[in-house]
Length: 38
Image 1 (cartoon, rainbow, N blue to C red):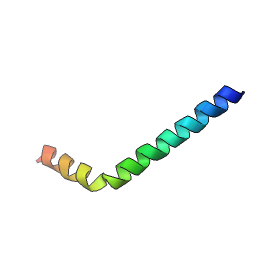
Image 2 (image 1 turned 180 degrees about the vertical axis):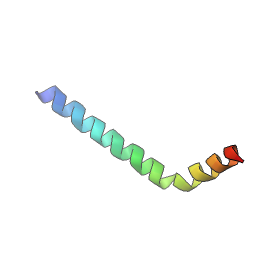
Image 3 (image 1 turned 45 degrees about the horizontal axis):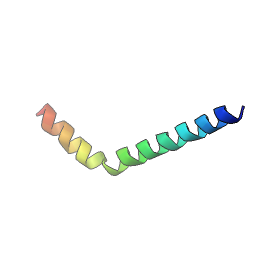
Image 4 (image 1 turned 45 degrees about the vertical axis):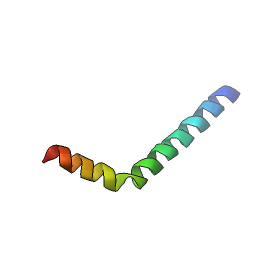
């Protein structure tokens, strides 16, 4: 039960970091995306 709890915590932290990165770099990602589309 202990290991599954650790895995769950790690995955939650990773998701939070990914969301934060996406939120911080949303403008750059959008400009890059529009550059590819156009």
